[in-house]
Length: 346
Image 1 (cartoon, helix red, strand yellow):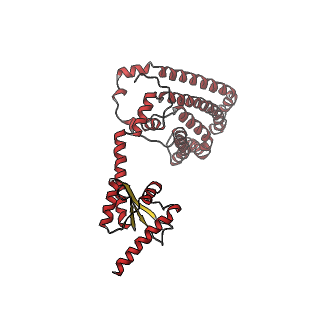
Image 2: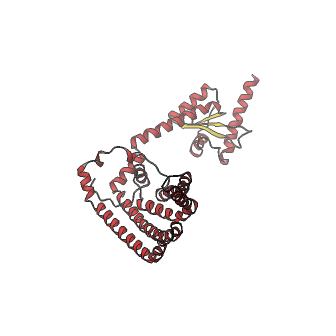
Image 3: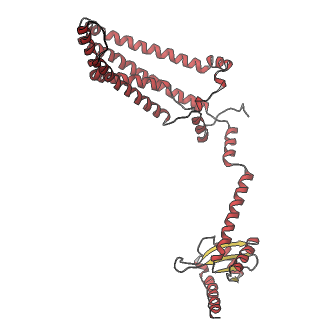
């Protein structure tokens, strides 16, 4: 059974178990590319907010003191430069991870696993098909990114050479513009490659969690439970329902019997009911228990075989009687009420 081919899509339960183990379809490239692109997009704002202030304080310190000393102005400028970059990186990492796997945290992958330090398993992973695919992806990614960065730098080379002839503060703007163009193109390309990698990771994940027909049957059996256990549970529920029915007999107005095989307890309250209601019913042993309970609580017992059979067959416990039985039940209740008035008069 263990070697049976896995051809079936994973069930929701299988997916949930894999998720609890930390096995989800995600690409680390998505996080890296999104964070890199967010830093590039945030860089101009960070430079205007704190970078220029830091460089101005740095130059002033060199000119005035003739030596590099970290001043308060430089510290404030550095913090103002780093704050938006760190915030952008943190928020982007959260969003990128949430888009891939949702809000999910599990400590199970952090638990010790001897297979991770097993040299044989490690050697197998090193030369596995997955490792070969990951190496090929890394080579392709590096080659494409290097090619785009090189061509972008060549297009910006004249501006960089001209900026090299300017003072430091004046050269900062064209230099940052050139680096921004390089970073933007590299970031967009990296993100596109990361999306392709995510699609591959998702396909590979779906293939990994596939199930065999035997596994599907086993999961269904486990979810349904043991047949003997289900039978015991059903028996307990039926017993509890019978006990509730027997307890309801004390509130009945009359018990209609077969007189031996069937017993149906009826209750009628003009203030709350539109028609008499069956509060307990049974046949055989259950009918006997209903009769015993009726005698215990002095509930009248009226033999009426046709009515008892009809009530037992047509009305469930807790339901009101159908209109077809109104006349027969009304006659029984009228008889019971006359008995009660006769007892009170005595």
